[in-house]
Image (tube, rainbow, N blue to C red; front, side, top):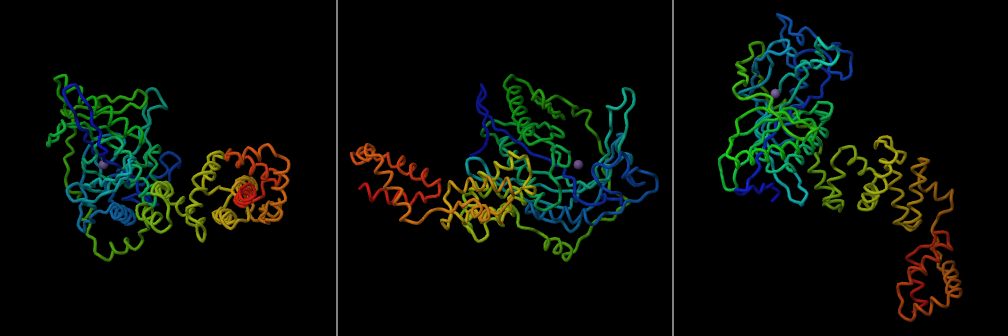
Length: 485
Ligand code: MN
């Protein structure tokens, strides 16, 4: 069991948590206008009359945004609703020029689904998805340019969002962290959201409550808005759960309120109490017809689905013989998994995985470069592994060749040829060196024969040195053993 139990002074408490995640949809234009979604444009460069809330402007639904949300729903094993509706969510704020947000309320595009998460103890758990609805994003208020004025940038106003709502299935910060990483991995595989929490393209609201172990009903929850990293989400859940337990145990009550997590202090503080909660006065959006989908449209989206991380991981374990841990590390990002598959093609996959997770990732880290910038191609890493398995070079030489590959970008067979690094497997040549080592070290030979078998490592080392690392250590070992027996 991966749940977190808080041992209070009056007994044990269970943590309950649900998440709401706003994901910016990857599409060239906004969800109800033709304006560009390009990130990093000049302020207010990508604003149409619709995005600016000009009177008389009519929204037109962007088909690509609908496709992306359906694709995401399929990726989360969810039901796609053939009938959905748009609603107006009314509130007054400077970054919302229409005075309302077009969203979905009663009839969302995507219904119930689930996401499988993998936990540190090797177990897994399904987290329920309640719904996914699509809606428009708001603009951005800028308060740090002038001490007396606020400015507004509407570039983000009208960008398509998918709001993914989970069931209250999380029982620990670890589970929520594993879910967010898995969700990010899935939307990146699908190309439906870039998943960058620090840039705000994936924003997480966290709902937390606690209950005594054994209680079945939920107690009052608190919501923390826009927590912007996986680590902060986990910290916020733990802090908030402990605060609830402490409050209850000291005879207090928890009132429903919206709070904000302060990452610097690691605490949450009140944003607004329930009595000031918004009344959004939802009503059906009169400017848009209900969204009615046919099977052909949904099937067409289905045909574009790619192999997702869970399925890929399963295949790497069962078909390529990787450990579940190695497979999940390599499958987290699609680019990494595809790079690995290219490298492993036709070679010993397990050995390629070891190289990739060891020396290769360390090299990328050290050079501070991404996979795409790697001087070593997947084909060349595969070749390097092949040179070792076919006994052309030994493992130690391979490490040196790897360093040269990273420096020069050359193929391993070229380096081996240029530097004359081919392993000596010629038994006669090795035997000659061994005889010399034996003749030069009568003391150690006697000690070995007298029972100090650990000296074998030293003998092999002498031969490796004399052969400049090119002897095959397996062969050396074998010959030594028979000579000294
Ligand atoms: Mn929303």
